[in-house]
Image (cartoon, rainbow, N blue to C red; front, side, top):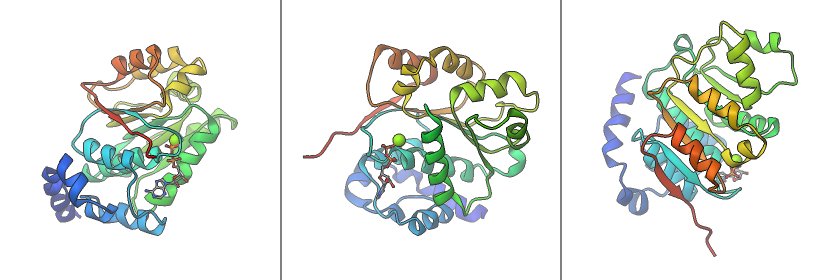
Amino acid sequence: SHVEIQEVVSRYGELTEEAKTTQWKVFSDYPLSRKTLDGLEKAGYKEPTDIQRDCITLALRGLDILGAAKTGSGKTLAFLIPVLECLWRSRWSKMDGLGALILSPTRELAYQTFQVLKKIGFNHDFSAALLIGGTDLAFERNRVAGTNIIICTPGRLLQHMDENPSFTCDSLNILVLDEADRILDMGFQQQLNAIVDNLPVKRQTMLFSATQTKSVRDLARLSLKDPVYVSVHEHA
Ligand code: ADP
Ligand code: MG
C-alpha cells in the first residue's frame, strides 16, 4: 500500500555504513517491502551475505554499483532484492512496461536467476520473462511486449531489439550486468555496447564481475555513472 511504501522509504535515511555493520543482522532489519521479506523468508533466506548487505544498502539509495565478488557469494539476491524494491517503491504495475533488465552470459545462468526471482518475488505483481533463445522468436515475442522484468542473454535481447517492433526499453529503470567478465569473454562486447546504447541514460546500473580486466573497466565506463565500487573479500 502507499502507506507502507512511505514508511519503508522514510527509513532509507538509515541506509548507512554504520547501520549495516552494527544494527542490521537479518533481512527483516532492512527497509524492505513486506512482499520481498515474506518471499525471502519462505525461500529460507534469513541473513544477507556480505555482498548482499553492501548492494542492498547502496542500491536502495539509487547508486550505480560495480561489484566484485566470487562465485557463491550470493550475487543473485544482491541484485534481485534491489530490483524488486526499486519497482515496488515506484508502484510499478503491469501497465508500466519494462522496468528492469538483467543480462546473463549463458542460458543456464539466466534460467537459474529466473528461478530465484520466482522464488523470492512471487508476492509481487510484476510480470517477468526469460529470453534465452532456443525457442522460436515469435513465441517469445508475445511474452516480451510490456514485460516488467526481463532476464536474458545479450544476443537474444539484441534480436528482440532489432526485430521486434513491439519491444521497447524506454521505461527501463534498472539494468543488471551479471558476470560481465564472462559476457565479454564470450565475445559479446559489441552486442553489450549496442544494448547499452539502446537504453535510457537515466537509469540505475549494477555491474558484477569476478575480474577487473580492461574490457570490464571499459564497459563500466560506458554503462555506469559515478559507480560505487563494492568488493567482497574471502573470509578465512
Ligand atoms: P553467486 O552469483 O555470487 O555465485 P549465488 O547468488 O548463485 O552466488 O548464491 C550462491 C548460493 O548461496 C546459492 O545456493 C544461494 O541459494 C545461496 N545463498 C545466497 N544468498 C544466501 C543467503 N542470504 N543465505 C543463505 N544462502 C544464500
Ligand atoms: Mg551468480
